[in-house]
Image (cartoon, rainbow, N blue to C red; front, side, top):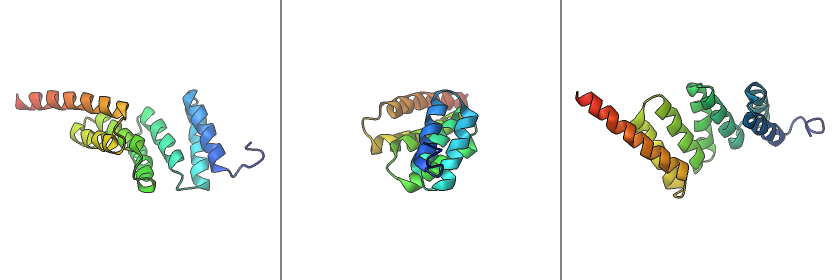
Length: 133
């Protein structure tokens, strides 16, 4: 398909998603970048790239792509959840809870965001207890 139309952002994004799911992160990065060169406002490519960057612990870059998703599509619950994951990984539990709550507001049946909010609430309680000592 890429030989037929190498300027197709959707094809690059779909290939990147498959490569990412198979752990071929460097190849996936290449195709996410290609998709975004072709279409800088492609929310799906920003979202997939953001998820990959979280996996690589590249939180600043992940945050850029995830906030782009929200700029393009303010009702993207997955992006809010993933921003919450970034904040959680940085031990910024209050910020994380805000984004998990927003994900649930956008998509009330979002089980993963509900679970994440529960976990971060527990971590926040532990952190507050340690701060009191």
